[in-house]
Image 1: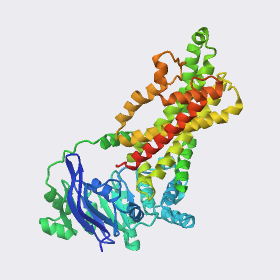
Image 2: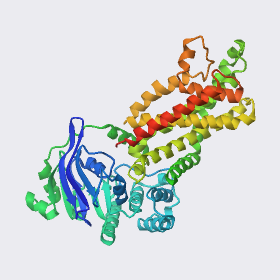
Image 3: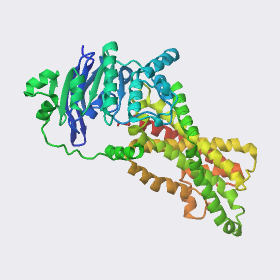
Length: 264
Length: 247
């Protein structure tokens, strides 16, 4: 049985249809890349999968649980690293982990053990008492990944996790994730704009454009289907070369302001 | 319970760690107190109303209270996209508990802030009429802070950008403050006196003035009843709107 199942998912914002009758599934233990140009519906789909947004119609299942009917069951079974930061900057790395564990009902004994293990895993154990605001972008992402894994989720969602990170940090991060996928069997579902990343890491790829899935399969399948040599070419062939004129949303305006204030 | 506690504790830790924030937020009420106190004091006493500083302190405390509370409620607009709030929204916790934890945290901070202003006003020469009533005054501050934090939460749950925030500040918070009798005495014979009785902050100002200086416009019983009822309403409405928040 697939661990993620999406059936005829549609999301409308007023007249605008962000996601149009989308269906796909992700097998357990896969590393699944969800690709698409700006405004294609990637983040909207992730938000619906992670209970942050209610679909207009359609069904979603994670690990056999209906996302809309049993949101709390579903919330236990996934971890997420958002596109925008969601750490508490004024707290220490350790405190951020601790609050997460309490929110997810991880018992104290297990909590202490796991926090140590995970912070060591992402190389942040010696910085556990530092305030998060003193961290670099890469360290924050690592901490977010560690936090997302704290309650032992079956699926880890990552929405553009490598945006704004240097190649060293990016490599490091994917290594962690691959290791995790191999040893723990965690399903990884991620979006990215870096095609070579998806090419290297993912064993299953879906491309979404204008709210609909335009292709889905393994890397080889996509290349054969489009008659191209690389994922980048296949992607451009599937989605066209036009640059997307995405309308600036209120979130983008706030994001710009946020970045202006926090960039170091 | 543990969820509410940890979210409350989080806000308290953040507050106590940020010394510049504490000092910065005390400066405004202090300046208001000194500038208005020194400026209007002589006029006030000439009009036969007595000591203006004594009159003004409960008003300035109420000002601190409404600004701090509404602001901490409205932080949600920002927090749900770029902050820790999103982390709580995907957690297997009821939205009601998140809202209550947040609101209690915000109200505690506002109360702390107001208590600090009260103690600072001692420097300006203010003396409460009875020290025994000060703890009750602090309880009234907490109750009102709950009211306005919940109100801020309710409004913020319905807004999705910061422009809306400015609107609320200018068209809701400012009028509530100016019409409350915080900086001038209310008069039943004027239209302002009537309008003030529809302003929730008037009851905070009145209760604090009653408890701290033994001067009042309404009765303490009425003040407290109005505040309790409005707090309940705001908590219910606020948690309902918050439970519907989508990102």
